[in-house]
Image (cartoon, rainbow, N blue to C red):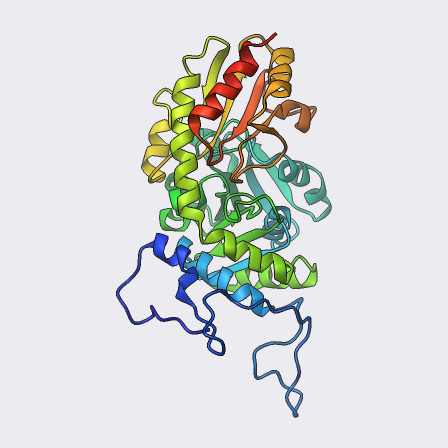
Length: 386
């Protein structure tokens, strides 16, 4: 692939995303990249791979452009694609050593929290869960010389808790630990964790990076190509946690509209958060863009151009009313996941089960790119109906 922009002045991230770095297929001059479906590549006569390509589990040319684009958007050194967000996230921990200590949030993606609380123990890893938005609690949990990784998620699903990335990076590094950030809800449109001191940023690319609810994928981007990063590459290959060629092609297609999708969804989310804050059937709105929300000032510092498109609302009449309201929506879709062009609603406590941090009266909302007026009217009628 050729890159027509490599000698020009630096381009805005919106331009890099829309043109997928401007790479052009050298043979066909196509602006849409070809799909490489081959699982293996021919060796040279002396049994070498001078093409740089060998077997799909270790390397895939269909990954190159998406990984390069994400690296540019995050301002990192290297990126890796994985078969799912969970595959990317668990690779971060599997690349640690037995006996290493981890600090993770109490409020975080539920499936990963369960994995850390259970399966990670079998790998000899010890995890302490703390309120990472509380600097004193975080400082107390970190064990200098023993803690090897601090994992944070900000905004954190499903309460949208905000953690100060720069302050946490300083705490982690002073104790000899790395900081990894799940930035799925923020995306590189709003937050660039590596620029704030993080060592690693993870995305469930199933969500906003792809944005069309038609694939599962995960990504990691590192600030440095070091020995730990090489272990991450090895984990992906050895565990077979790679993405399919077609899915990588779809992900790149989705990333080209990332900025327009996220900005539209953020604008609608801000409008909805403000309107629902005054709704007579809602007792509270959890959204970082509201001035009264805990962490709003931190979010304003580390999020640029918006506060995300995820929010949760608490229904005044309680759990049964919340579940009933979700059953009556027509424009919102009752479905798990987030970050697609369509707006989704979910009674999160029912999904997560025992131990969830989600109050029973909470509805999680993923705001898409539809009309904010239509979305408000639909949930309004659902809340008011009996």
